[in-house]
Length: 457
Image 1 (cartoon, rainbow, N blue to C red):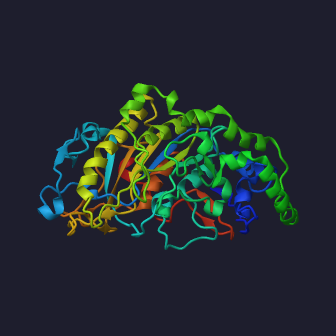
Image 2: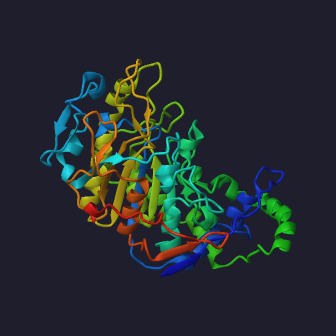
Image 3: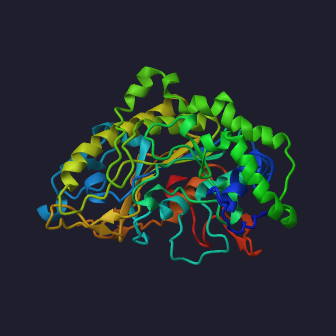
């Protein structure tokens, strides 16, 4: 039994320059102290339980894509359900997906469509795709950590220059579509380091660490002023830390080339990068931009040392009066097809297919019956996911929906079952790991009774 204590959360407060006390606790330690970036590096290093480098890439499709139009076609259903697209055969006998995914169809033996995700809470946000938990479920003190926070806590960093838990999550107009989760009761050190914001292309200069821009971090004068204001409270609350080797490691994240190189796609083989297709920097209304190159960047971050990478890709909420479900599908599906095929091909060619797991999903599915706007509305009863890599038994379909795609007819799957599978893929002990929340209550990686998808192991 592995038992680990969580971190108590800091009280909120705000400095006159707008930096919250909590944000200062998160990052201010680069100047001197607090629960800080150096503290985060210390906590990650202290928590490291093994030196293996297995990783997870979590691709979130904000808004909830249509399961029927993606990877669970219903060609025998009435026209008002089956929609405008025909199915296409794959290289796995008996498995068909939408005709707009020919590249994935040709290599379906390397993918796993999960067609029966059945416990969506119906909320229009990323929370369930980042934590596995429903937002309205019992929340422990401090809240549930993102899945990447658990991985970061239990396995630590691969090297000091790249955080274990990173995100390429754009700040979206619908704010909940751009939230990669938090450290929850584990504390700030395990929250994701988000490497993008409102700029489509990533670079060290627009990197955001725990909500603070790199430009602000580099302004040591402002940091020192903020620190002087903070010192009086911190001195009396026992939160001060001396600057030490971990402060240097924190600086490594910001100043050494390891992370910067991973973000610099000009260093990628042009032929490899071209496989992923063409990105667009245009934010899709209140969603993210369709930056397909971030699939390649996620792979580069994993190779550089990240253990968990989350990203949000484009916008998949198309059921308004403009009737854009099928026109947007024709625009988005081929790009997603090319990007996912390139990523999984990349992993196999680099010998990473046993070590890197990929999951692609949204927060819920879409109504089988097409609405009056020739689109599909929200449908939490069932949705789909696509898995790949991680040494899983690929080339099979998990679950079956009924003839109209309304509900799971066989093998319903929960979000937490997917995460349990991913955790097992990276070597975490589901049954033997207890982590205490801030109230001292033991918590587990997944709820009791949840197991990995046994067909994939």
